[in-house]
Image (cartoon, rainbow, N blue to C red; front, side, top):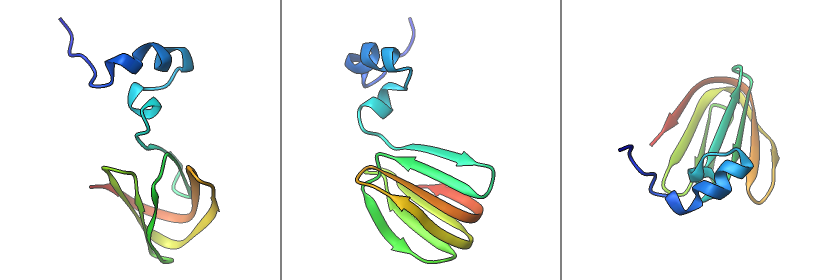
Length: 92
């Protein structure tokens, strides 16, 4: 018998939306496009901001982006875009 997701009750909705149940439940979704762009959905706010490091709250996850020339390209209530030369992405 396979391991059940802790969000098992969301599995039917997630399946219809073709998304992981964790994302449907509000967990962050992070997309890295090459090394010049990072998109994040379901963020909880910017914790620190600089051209070499940006820290973002993902609820239970801290996302730390390091690089050069980092900029916040766009931000809304639940999504954001970071551009620049991304060297590392750390999840804590």
